[in-house]
Length: 160
Image (cartoon, rainbow, N blue to C red; front, side, top):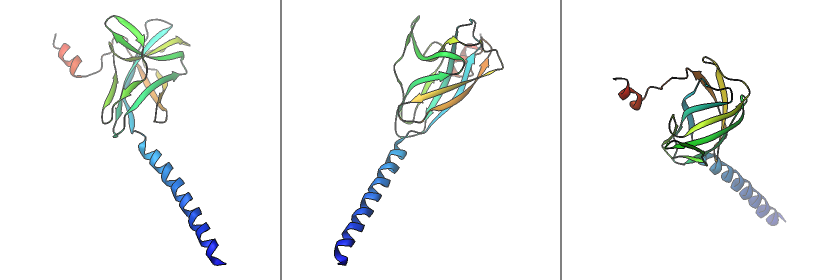
C-alpha cells in the first residue's frame, strides 16, 4: 500500500520545484537599471517642458524605455530630434552593459499640457516605464533655462 503514495509525493515535489525555478529565472533576467543626471530646464512656455537623463544598464540583458508619466503634465512622450525636426520616438533601447542618454538636441522627454510651469529649484517627479524592468520614479530637479550639464561636449565649448 505504501508504493502508490511515494510516487505521488515525489511528483508533487517536482512540480513545486519546477514552479520555483521558473520564477527565479524570470527575476534574474530583469536588467539592472539606474537613472543618473536627470534634470529639466525651467520651461520658457506655460505648456511645454523638456527633460533629460541617462539610464544606465549594468546587466547582461538589454531593455527598452517605453513611456513616461508625470503628475505635472497631461502627457509625457519620448521624443527624438533629427536635424531641426522633433518626432515621437518608439521604445528606446538601453543596451546590455550600456546607457541611454536623453540630452538636448537628441532624444529627450517632452512634457506637454503642463498643469503648472515648474520653476528653478523645484523638483518634478517622473515615472519611467520599461519593457522588462519595473517602473522607476525619478525626482528631476528644475534647473535654469540655460543650464548645461558638465560633460565632454560642454567642456570643449567652455573655452570660448
